[in-house]
Length: 338
Ligand code: NAD
Ligand code: LMR
Image (cartoon, rainbow, N blue to C red; front, side):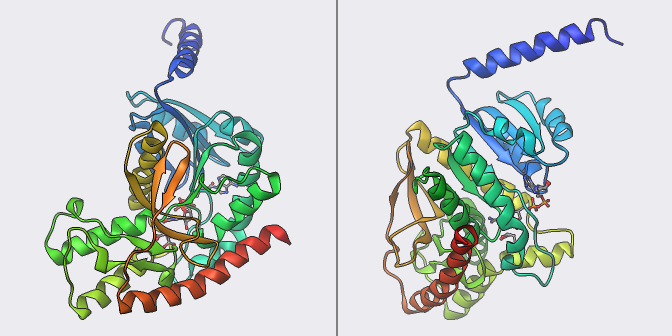
């Protein structure tokens, strides 16, 4: 055995605590569901994010191993693991941003709504703890069905008297990431140079890419519009089928979640002009929640942009999207109210 192992550990834990306390420059982030398919690569990427000073990894299984593994990375963030419901409150205390990828994923043949029965309860429990322990934190909801889990979190926060619509965001970034990739492929561009606004929600026809507003400005044939809209709306199903029962998108999702979390943290830091798409409480349509481009700032969502001019194809898509969204939102709301 190496000499003084226990003493060395004690000393290093106390130094880590000092570092965590003194790390005023960075933000404290908790990941709930950190040992899962998304949670693990998300935890790894957040450990690499220079804006993060403290990273809390919470799950109902396997966090000791994931935390030990990730804590060996020689980056700035101090990592702490939390296991099981009895450590949930501790995991949430003092954090600035909570990211929630907890819950079951789809298998082939399932819709995201088929996950409602299990994931609704998980998101409700986690949201109750957030309301109690970090009511001012920004919350990024990844757990599906996002169109219902965000309204669930909102209802829980309303019940607790802590709801701040500026701080609750459903993560639809993967739809934008996919849209950028597929559109760049069609245009023969580098995806990093392409930005496609994707509005509505995060399931099937509620995912509405605004191909008329792509940057850089470009035009598509009707066939390309059909192909791209269908591919973007079914990107999740494409991965679910390719994984053939082993789950849904995890790696691209972790990438998208970090891209989005980083934008939230840059907003919190006070950076100007941080704009991303997210599913938020909104007055952009008559629905209480809707995904559109939002400006992120020190208090969360500081501005929600209108949809802009839509062409006929997009207007028809919007009507379909709103119909499905309305019932998914209502389903989430009634789950908490009943
Ligand atoms: P996974 O099964 O690999 O991991 C989920 C993790 O959640 C597991 O480690 C599990 O132990 C944990 N968990 C379960 N109940 C929990 C609880 N009460 N508290 C804390 N943790 C709990 O699944 P995954 O592939 O990581 O997907 C997770 C969720 O994200 C799914 O609902 C999936 O549909 C969704 N998802 C959303 C998007 C999006 O774009 N928003 C993209 C991909 C996946
Ligand atoms: C995705 O878009 O990849 C996720 O919502 C997971 C899924 O079930 O498709």
